[in-house]
Amino acid sequence: MTEKTSVLEKKPKSFENLNVLGNQGPSEKKTFYIWFHSRKIQKRLVMFTFMFLPIALLGIFTYYPFTQMIDFSFHKMKWIGAREWVGFKNYIDVFKREDCFGALKNSLYYMGGAVFQLCLALYLATILSFGVKGGKFFKGLMFFPYLINGIAIGFIFKFFYTRGFVLDTVLQAIGLNIDNLPYWLKDQSINNVSLAATSVWKYFGQNMVLFVGAIMSVDSELYEAATLDGANKWQQFCYIILPSIKTIVLLNLILSITGSLSAFEPAFVITDSANGTGTYFTTMHEIAYTSQKVGLAAAMAVILFGMIILATIFQKVLFAVLFKNAEIEDKKGGKKRENKINRMKKRKGII
Amino acid sequence: MKSDFQLKLGTFLWKLLQYTSLVLFGFIAVFPVVSCVITAFKPESEYKSTTVMSLPENWLYFGNFVTAWQKSNMGRAFLNSTIIVIFVVFGSVMIGSMLAYVLSRFKFRGNGTIRNLFLYAALIPGIAMQIPLYKMMNTIHFNNSIPGYIILMMGTDVISIYIFIQFFENISTSLDESAIMDGASYFTIFFKILFPLLRPAVVTVMILKGVGVYNEYYSANLYLQKSELRTVALALYTFVGPMKSQYNLICAGVLITLTPALIIFILFQKQIYNGLTTGAVKG
Image (tube, rainbow over the protein chains, first blue to last red):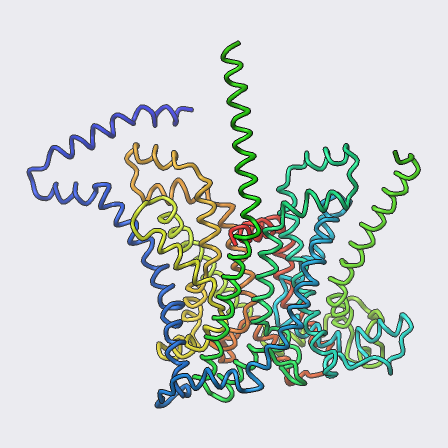
């Protein structure tokens, strides 16, 4: 309390001080002092010191390498040594070589996984938000895989999928014959599904937490009112939950799709890209660091960046189209409410 | 109208569905890790003679953990990781909060441009950038150097800046104004008045960034190749060759590297969830 009053008391004082200082100033030393301590200069000083480092780092570690990447993509080059301008040859190669662009079809498995993961996350988030005992505990269990490092996940699932180990033991226990089971990581008809499943395992809990957060922000009175009106859970989900979180669901869908274009972790640490599990990214890694075809790898990176930009633009357009109507409705609703309030005010004023 | 019995049956079925789903997927989430825990407590002979899912005879056998720790030089790796995490987290918090302060409090030409520059940077896929970055890190001799790696990790961080900007926008500017009236300098305002208020955001950024840096292995693998510079994740990666099928040792190693993340998670569950939600809403 005393502090607050002191602030109030000081207010006019500091103004006076400023004015006095501003009018004074015959001696040079003092004018420099005043100039240096003037708000304008102080502001510039703070802006410079606070922004210099982050912007410098952003330039050095993001934008400069980005221009370099584009530059590399037009050259035939290794890490060390002379380079040669080849124009668009690298780009043409990316589309021609089976191992480059062809690897993108493995992304389809991860996209499928991503869609499944979103549906699962949405389902579990809904269940959690309708109130359960121990909900926090289950939420924690399902979320934790997200915090495990990629190498550890790699080992866990190598162990999990190896012939005769964890998964096979479990399946045998429920009565399946091991001879009918595929080699989860070697059999080309199933191994990409196995890998995409590890990605689902890692991320479904994280998605779920995001959705729970979004559902919690819905006014709980809405559910109560709906229950009183006799709406069942499915109706509540369709008419209350889904409309209010559709933005975040769609956003995550698109993030997952761009994420699956750049999927690399499972193939990188579990199968070492063997047996047809290589993704676009692991191929790029190999071309860059093993074959040392730096220009070609840079072209792959630029193309990937292009695809991600396209997906982002698509998202913006989609959102603009989908949510335009909703916004107009909102505005109309708002206007109506405003009018109503105004009318009420007028009435009260009259009374 | 539904009868009383129908209502009760409906509620019962709904509860049944709720709990079976949660138990099933909770089980799926922990089961691979549990299988690892079971194996990590089995000595060599027991591991070879029993099936994977049979429980260990002695839950207090820590031999695998000791061997795994020594073989991969985990002590050194934990020291390296701790140094890296502390400096990167400190740097990211300072850089992020200071930039967010200027961007959210000062109106100047270029404010929007700077925000957009950081926003677009988030679109560029991090791993795609590694090719030019690798060449650059070699040129400026930042490879095989822990300080170099720390600077790289601080420099490629956008999310924490967003968390801070969002937080600043929820702090009333009247605080700044009254301090200015009091004659406080901008530095005082930031460090003495606003920074203490940022605490929840600081905790969130520290945890998310800390866990992220601790788990990072792709960049670490490229830039910290000398064995004495290895981080924890990289030390675990050395198990790939020599211990190919000794899963009792590998699982012990996995559990060692996973423990710090587990402790952080148990202690700061709420902050982690909050941080993720703030980051996501900003999109």
